[in-house]
Image (cartoon, rainbow, N blue to C red; front, side, top):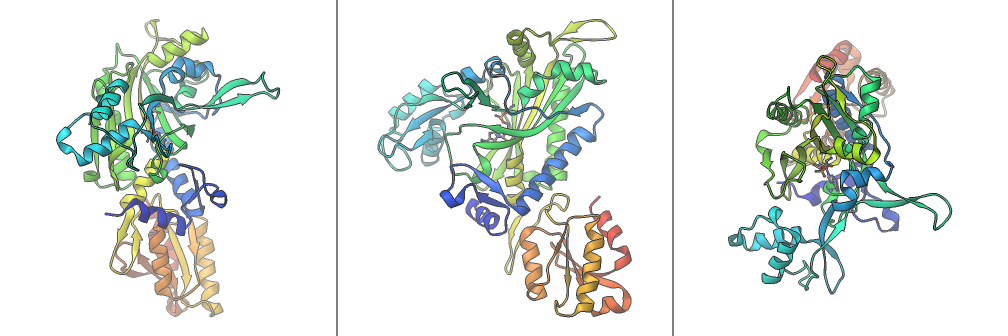
Length: 458
Ligand code: GAP
């Protein structure tokens, strides 16, 4: 299996992902997306938005602010309890998550068989004391304490009079605080959902898993509102689970054996959630959460109504009944979808590295080459084809080096098809189309090329 280092190395070398602020030595758990990464990220976001917002008649989308009124985060419970158990290496002062150190300890002591996710912070402290769990550098560690993940910032200019604000810890609350606006300004009736893609920020303790866990992340969240008296929540919950599974396997092209459902235990689940599942992916460092789905009941709307004084209830136009809708929330990190796509696609063959990305999300769909660069008649024809295809798809151009190297270069960035213009093109109007995965080549008429690729991308 591909390692995280191999993925990170390809990402850097080919312009998918760079360490943030690298010229200053980087910034922990922070990454920038390069030209190809920006394309892949955008394609994933577009596919998510199309599938879950545009293609459905029961969904609308919004785009709320990163900075919300600070009371939002008091109401949601983030100020009080959005935290992780922090421990510190008493020698190096490096910080770790206590649950992660216990998980790592367990790998060497499988007989211990403890469900880390069920441990309270006091139980973690006791476990680490009894089993003498050390830091990865082999030093003693401090007792765990709760560490709030919300990033704080200040509004205003006069020092001492600045108001405390938070960078949002999830996009979800911008949906709840707009619930009334959405109902009043759109023809939506229950059940309906609201989708949003945007940046969230978390002061994460653990670092070192590339883009899996970052300080700044992009989320794709859905709040699906319904009346619990008329819509059975289990049916809705299962249908959303099916939609998530289908997106990962069909749109993202992931093998079904690489994903699994994991139900949260009663102790692990948030107090307001009636049921929570993680859709896990088999990353190169093991099964990890890709996407979560939770039945959050009426907790969030009730909390926001209580703290703001606003009436966030819904009136059923048929019966006149007034109530606070319940909500099911599928929430995914777009950057984790990206890492999953790279992990799944990365294939080491004898003579090449090939990224077998699903064509719909690949940064370039097609690359066009003249067989040789220094023959104007070939280069001109190839440019003509490139320009035409570019009006329909994202298309790469390459005329450097020999044709074999150009194929290998496109394989490594996941371009599904390469078009080569050769001398036969000038005679019979056909080009060679080479398939990334099979490396098979076929002759296609230039006039048929657009339709050929369009049909492949359906
Ligand atoms: N509104 C619910 C919520 O935010 P979450 O499980 O904390 O739930 C949802 O986050 C998803 O966001 C996760 O399943 C994961 O894909 C992604 N995510 C969470 N923290 C992340 C981080 N620090 N870096 C990258 N992705 C993250």
